[in-house]
Image (cartoon, rainbow, N blue to C red; front, side, top):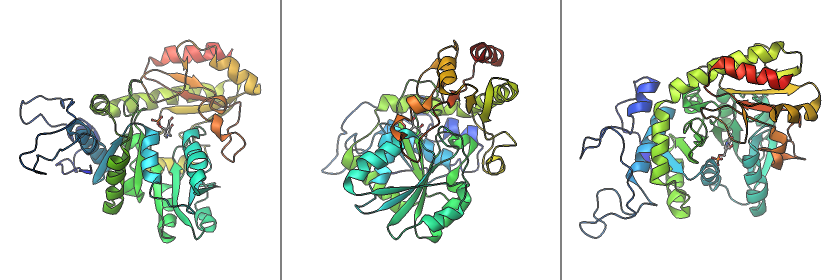
Length: 386
Ligand code: PLP
């Protein structure tokens, strides 16, 4: 079900939207949090005469609240919720036909690459990896069968920054679409639709949920035709999210802004420490003035985010030693929650990119910096670095 953000919050600040859009007090009871509607079906007054809901795969009131929320946060007219970020990505990619091509930013989540390469590849969809730090390459890489550009910014795991406005414009000039995976930035730090992107997709499992207790995916768009496609796929395929998980996400987004402020603040303190540390070869963070995408990030983001990657001296062996030595930073996949996590993407989240143009340096360590007390986080990392 398409869920337009027919709200009054267009001119409100981000945190006001996060707390109120789609989450007004319940009309019947006055409850100030959105009820978890577990009903699978809804009474009809006559055949096909109902109050907007008929069957819970097609539409659910708790899910609708979440869809209105993400639409409002991304400045979009339509929002859709799915059972995972991958389910959301799949719903978008189902617009493709055998023989179509996707331009894929040359750094992206391993699961996205796997979906395109191993699942869509089987039905004749092709991908071309493009270094989107050079937006001119969009035009020169575009083929007759190219339909869209798919990018993350900042990317997972190298934190490369791509220029959303320039890349969207290039895709449109060629008659195609631009899809932005906004998982790392979140709508608090960056709103791609306002820069020309056609579709925004999220692994809501990460910052939007924020507490490592829900898997979900969200999509937002202003394009009515794409919204029709997404609603049709959501109902037709049925990779929907449960009302309980919608509730967790509705609760999570209320504090997104304050959490992101703290994530960014903590990440910056850690970047400052790592940049001076003798055991560190390179720190990757868009907030660093020497980062290739620093200027673009400063233009299109409110702040630089809570994800930090680094390459230690001593290669993969050192990386493995560090990630198994921290105590507060838990060695685990995923990111974006209140607790700090550490991982080696080449062997964990990005294993499926091995041998491809998206392959990750095996010595790269990725941090998801949480909102714990910064002195404790720094002490933990310093002890692990030795
Ligand atoms: N996009 C990005 C950038 C991710 O990091 C992930 C998961 O790590 C996904 C999409 C997939 O989301 P999910 O795990 O919710 O299916």
